Amino acid sequence: MSKVKDLGLKAEGEDELSWARENMPALASIRKRFEKEKPFRGMRIAVALHLEKKTGILLETLKAGGAAVAAASCNPLTTDDRVAAALAGQMEVYAWAGENSKEYEWCLGKVLDSKPNIVIDDGCDLILMLHDKRKELLKDVRGACEETTTGVRRLRAMETDGKLKVPVIAVNDAYSKHLFDNRFGTGQSAVDAIMRATNVVLAGKRVVVVGFGWCGRGIAERMRGMGARVIVVEAAGAPLNGTESGYHRALEALYSGYDVMTMDEAARVGDIFVTATGNKHVIARRHFELMKDGAMVANAGHFDLEVDVQGLRQMAKKSRKLGPNLEEYLLGNGRRVRLLSEGRLVNLARPSGQGHPAEIMDASFSLQALSAERIAKQGGSMLPAVHDVPPQLDEMVARLVLESRGVRLDRLTKEQEHYVNSWREGT
Ligand SMILES: NC(=O)c1ccc[n+]([C@@H]2O[C@H](COP(=O)([O-])OP(=O)(O)OC[C@H]3O[C@@H](n4cnc5c(N)ncnc54)[C@H](O)[C@@H]3O)[C@@H](O)[C@H]2O)c1
Image 1 (cartoon, helix red, strand yellow):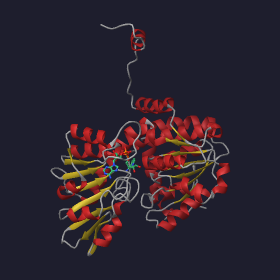
Image 2 (cartoon, rainbow, N blue to C red):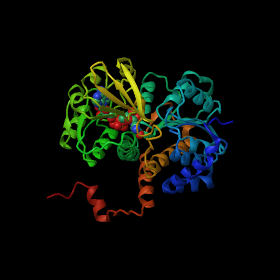
Image 3 (tube, rainbow, N blue to C red):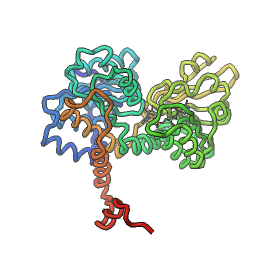
Image 4 (spheres, protein in one colour):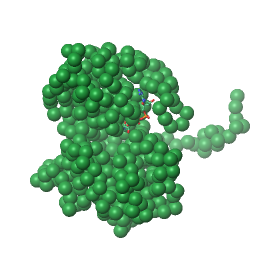
C-alpha cells in the first residue's frame, strides 16, 4: 500500500523515532489522552509534512487517537527514508528523498486517495490540490491545519478570492509556534545545516540574512553567536500580520546591532547568504553577478523560489558538485557561486539538513495535534476561512512544554490581580 525508498531501513528508522519520542514529552502527554478518548475514531487524516522523525511522532499520536493516517512529504528533498520505512508498516506512506516534481504530485495525490476527513499541510500544496484537482473530496473534509508562514499566506489569499471551501487552522500563527519553531528552530537548524554542508568557519564571515521575520531573526541571532558578522536585508511591502511592516523589522535589526542594507549592497560584501522571506527571487541574477568569488547561497524559506536557481544555472558556464548538499557554479565573470541544497530549505534538505530539534517540534506538533482535534470536534460548525489557534490552546502548549522541563512560574497574588485589572490606584 505504501511507497517508500527501502523498507529494509525500518530498523534504523525505528531508532530515529525512539530518540524523537523521548524528546517530545508534551506531545506524549497529549497522546496518552488521545489513547483513552480516541477523538479521531473512524476518521481519515491526510498529511503533507516534512517526513522525518519528529513528524513520525505526530503521526503516531494521530493514529493513537483513532485516525487512519496517509502521509506524504511537503518537499521533495526532506524525507528521511529510514523514518518513512519505519512508518510504512503502521500507516500509508508515500515519500522518498529526491522525488522529482511528477513523483511529488503523485505522492500528494495518493494521500488524497484516502478520502480524508482532516488535512494537515505544510506550505498549502495539498490543500490546493484538494481544491483544484480533487474537488469531489471536499464534501467529506471537516477542515485542515497549516504549519507554515508561506502556507498561511497562500490560504489567506485563497480566502480573499472566495476560493477556500474548508475551515483551516493557521497553526503557524500561534504564538507558541512561530516564536519557538520559526525563530529558535530555524535559527539553530539552518546554522547547523550550513556547517554540515560546507564545513566552513562562520566566525568572521559576513553572513547576509535576507528577511528579518521570525526565521530571519533566529538565523541572525545564531549566526552572531557563532561569531559571524551579520548583515540584514529587509524590504517594504510584504504582507505581515498586524501593524508590523518591513520598516519595523529593519529598525529592529538595526537596534539589535546588525548592519542593514539593500540586497544590491549586501551582494557585493557577503560571504554567506541565507534567505528567509517567503518571497520569490530575492536573490536574482543581477545579485549573483555582484557576488564575491566563492560566495555561498542558502535558502531557509519554504519554496525553492527565493533564490533564482534557474537563473543561476542558465548564467553558469560550468558547474560541479562539491558535496551532497553543495554545488558550485562558475559564472562568465570568472567568479564562483556555491549553492546549498539546490536552493531548497537548507535546514531540512537531507543529508546535511536535520530539521528542527525534537524539543522544538514538541511544541509545534502539540499545537498540530490539538488543532486537528478541534477540527475533528468542531470543524463541522466552523466557516470555510482561516482560523486562529484559540489562545487557550496556544497557552496550554507553552505550559505543557514548561511543565515537561520542570520549569514553574509565579502566580499573581489576589492583590496584584486586583491591581492590574483596576484603574483606581496611581501615584
Ligand atoms: N526553514 C524552516 O524550517 C522554516 C520554518 C518556519 C517557516 N519557514 C518559512 O520561512 C519563510 C519565512 O517565514 P517567517 O515566519 O520568518 O515569515 P515572516 O513573514 O515573519 O518574515 C519574512 C520577512 O521577509 C521580509 N521580506 C519579504 N520580501 C523580501 C525581500 N524581497 N527582501 C527582503 N526581505 C523581504 C518581510 O518583510 C518579512 O520581514 C516562509 O516561507 C516560511 O514558510 C521555514
